[in-house]
Length: 437
Image 1 (tube, one colour):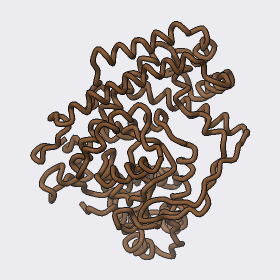
Image 2 (cartoon, helix red, strand yellow):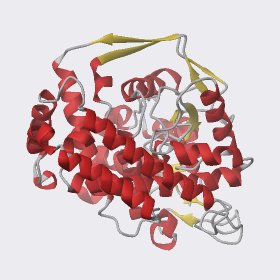
Image 3 (cartoon, helix red, strand yellow):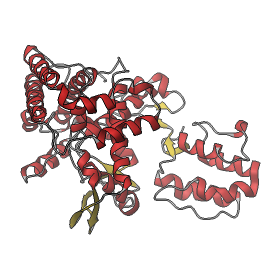
């Protein structure tokens, strides 16, 4: 199979399935080359398919022309579409060298989900789930970050990749939010191949960039991951040690999720709501002078205009729903390669935090009762309505016992960071060139 991005992914196959004249028997699978696919469907459906082809193959950065013939479509797919690696196509082979094999051989798309455990569908979905979970539990102006990501797709996608490759490019968090870094309005531009290769790992360059931002006064890491970052950042001097720090932060994430799940299981939902930074939805964010510099986003100014539209409440309710859903979903996978870092000191501080919440439960009982149990069993519409009512009941300021609770949780994560830093040379985190993860 071709190494290039030349095979339809699930999104493209779904688009084809929506064409009312295409029967199920003619739908492609993910191993049919896009040139063969275009030629076959043009032959089967003729002019109707050629008329629909521009909208079928359209992406946020690629606007196909009209096609007068099947030959014109094939020529365009071969010379223009495939080289731009659109999001609707997948590569036929992926080696992920040198982590797997010797850097020359790879598994083909047709069998890699079965033969290569690292590319197993379940594992790939787990990464997406982990990122999606942490998108809601990290610090940072998420509204501004989301707006900037949208602008990158429409304005900067054709800028060169931060690694020097041609576009199209997408926004990449310099510090992966799945490792606890802030969801903030600064990104590097990475092409599809570089973005896929990076996954949730940092390079030495990433650590240097984040350190420079932090040294200039910026916040790059969330409260729960800062202790591990602060203790280990200076130990990174190459890509191997950057990967080691990534692994430490992955276990830090897993440990935090266990603590948040304990709060969830005890029914202290208002405390969890306080961690979602809902206030950022109150502003319409704009960027002036947006451009790319050396593969990174840059802008002259950022504006925050207060907004009180109905959409603000809808945005907050959805954020709450997805955050709570993903927190629950995270723990449905039992084979995740991570473990909870803890000792008596961590357990004591978590227990004290839960005790403070229990002693002051009457103060937040109204909100806790609105959110209530049974979240996993309720339909989306019902959950959104439930969170709308909870948001409307939120106080103007969080009660003092929340600060006391968070201080204890901060102490627990501080101890976790200390334990992880002591494990810097542990075999779990030290990468061997003769083993694969």
